[in-house]
Image (cartoon, rainbow over all chains, first blue to last red):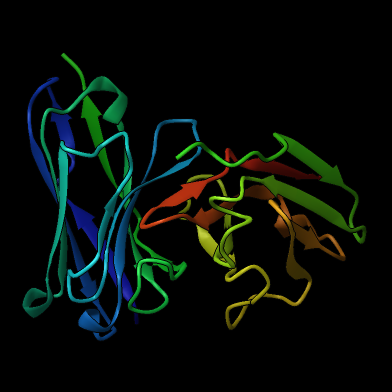
Length: 121
Length: 109
């Protein structure tokens, strides 16, 4: 069964850092691009960042550029999101999403259940 | 990276057809054939319904169809069923990034 399990969320103060992880199973991880998508409470979806199969192509939303870093470890079947200088507006449920193939422009066909990040003093 | 524009809500009766629009610009929807649609039920993760403008993933009902004209993409659901009631989001690729629409709440009357 294809599965994505996010972890690492929690309550942090503004300005702090947090590292999210996504453990993948049930598919050949290094064949696919991967993404992070977030959803603030009661709001819509917002794409955060994406990474191609070999980390050769990476993209970020303007709202997180310079503060967040996406990475992957294909040997560990894992995706990561390092989040620095967190702000209240980063409060959201963060989803890990698998692309349908290996490029950044491939749609997101499998989603995890999300990990909640709350930024508050 | 401005959000794509979707109607906040649409509604229809069982058996009817509805269409949800998604308007962007020539830099996103109009510039690429990488438009996708996602269905999200309350408290659940999104589910891919349409990719690359008009393609359905395996397992998605053929009652769902997608199209695009210029800077506007559309999702049509025919033969509405109660289980179609959900939020729907469009998304478009744009130059190493993706942008989502604000979402449309579909109510089945």
